[in-house]
Each structure stands twice: as structure tokens, then as C-alpha cells.
Length: 133
Image 1: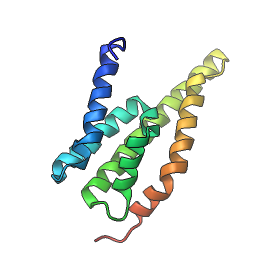
Image 2: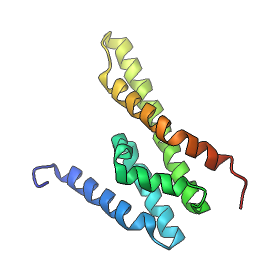
Image 3: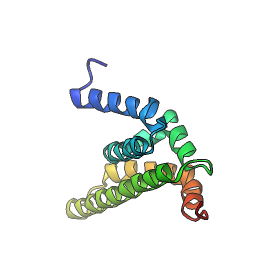
Image 4: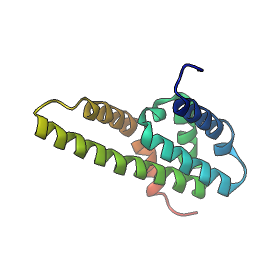
């Protein structure tokens, strides 16, 4: 872990802190902030959502028993991720057209998107269209 760049070490510690305590805190506002922060990290490191602890945390948050504030925070994090992903893919495609070369990052992002869609789309839709209350 000491051989990782400082930025990666901080990201790893932040994610661990968010996943292990803050996202499960009893305080609604703290949980909302934790999921928002996790969403920001997810934008920079999309493969984070493939981690089993993060996946379980998000799945629990989106479950029917999850509270509204947490569900809304998770949905906002996904929206942020998808908006940023769209920008990255668009830039990658433009660069590919300009250079005439295959854009590897687009394939990586698309693979992660597909995995996330398979894992979370049913929960996201169920949460979005669930009756209030």
C-alpha cells in the first residue's frame, strides 16, 4: 500500500471509511453526504462499483427497506456517474475519429457500464418508480 501513489492511498482510505462506517450511519444527513462523496469517487474510478462491499452497500441502499434520503443520494450518484461517462465516451469517440485509432478507454468504460446496468438497473428502476412512503 505504501508503494501506491498518495492520491490512490487517500482514495482507498476514503472509500474504506465511507463503506465501513459513514454510509451506514444512523444520521440521515451524514449518510446522504457519504453516498454523495462515494458518487464523486465513483465518477473518477468507475470500477469501484464492482467491489463487492460497495456493491452490497448500494444494493442495500436501493432496497425497498432503504430510506428515501439514502436512495435519493444513490440515484444522484448514479446520475453523476452516467453523465460523466457520457462525456468521457463522447470525447473518446471524437479522439478516435480524429486519430483513426481505436479508443481503449471507451471499451473499458463501456464494459463497466454494462456490468453496472446488469447489476443495478432493476433496483434503480424499482426505486425510481416505487410509490412514495
